[in-house]
Image 1 (cartoon, rainbow over the protein chains, first blue to last red):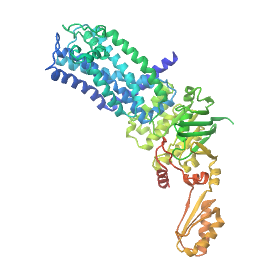
Image 2: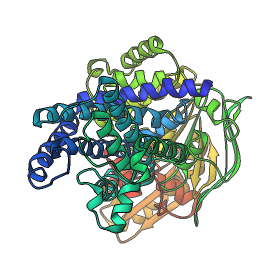
Image 3: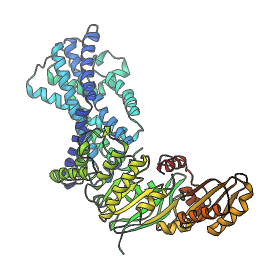
Image 4: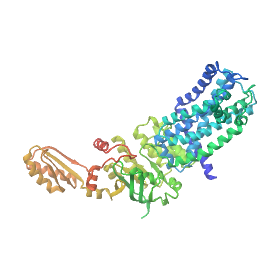
Length: 266
Length: 335
């Protein structure tokens, strides 16, 4: 219990340190806000002009998909930040301090929720400008946002592990790009998964990214007159997404903490 | 006598490379131990084990009376570490860095802030306290790193090559800072590649090579063992060599080395400056003309040559940067 309290207190100190960086390196913040705007606008106008989704305007359908993809990309900050700490040697400073073993990781993943919240806010405003609407009540909408952030938080624990394991920030960025791109495209993020060829359709249906997108769409009331999905994960998207979130954290949080304890500056 | 640091039989292997090969260290309370050795000797590995960053494959380690292996958490409360690569956050200001470290030592918010202000004052960083450390010079960053190690007023301070890579002026400043620290009674373990640095800062010196202690003692004891300073003379006339040889032999403690071709003679002497004056007097009286003359302090290479019979070399695959060549270059500059 004391360990947990310590982890939170120390984690908060580390999170504060990470957030100061937003102030000092505003380019990072500009990137975090510009790329979601670009995603929304590009997809809305480029894909939106040729993709049709039955029963709902494409822009309305699209936004939840862009949200999911962007917050997952946002979670790579965790990996990149930790990889940077490793190369700069500050990891040795932290490891020689009597702080909680998990604090650096808790602090890092926590501060990345802030990054992701900012990018969701920016995307929402951009979405509203291009014609996206929330058609449910505030509570549903909030739950939708919370689920998006929670999923990104879980993914950031995977990224934490990767960041501690690999040798440089560049590797984190490239490696995660190679995984995140297919994960977020072979899904119902930008197209209806029914139209995908056989195995890809199955993959998309069971892909947790699809469940999160589906859950967000339902939470924001963007499903319109879409035919209801057949696959079990998409019929129970919130439950399915939460199971994934729990499982990912249960696996990768202890793995990352163990990796941190072994880690040494490079 | 109570020992604040006690390590016995430390062994650490990385695959086929043996970084530490049965190293023993003891540091009495309130003293400074200098761990002297070339790159790859195992200095950093030893510090990493003592500071809980690395687990030894074998051996016992006690710091501040606590078993490092059994209770690393407790050890971390008692130590401060300042490493080779200035481990401060470059985006944070000096004040923010120190406050963060204080919070992570669990000093509490108010005490952490007060301590940051105190240390910035003490380390002459007050003017730059609110600038991101990215803008700092190497010397300033090292000072801040050292300050960070002292935030919790630890019982034991570990300094891993505190002046490697610093320019001569910053190095001297750093030495003064460390001497102040020592005067206040801290127990310090310091690693260095510089004989001069160990001489100046350490009560006791352990020379290590290939993971093993090859000599230990005070700076004076070691210097006696190595033969102290050397006089080197270069004559203008080869015919004078026998006479110069005779004069030098009288002063030498370890025999005279002669290079006939270069007309160069050299010998280890004790009481360097006096011996040099004496020699110059005799050479002048004897009408021996000189091209060059000098008094050379023993370098790390001399130490190694005399202790091990081999030149200090850079063992591959080590974590420390720089090379013996650059050490030599830096020594030249430092003079």
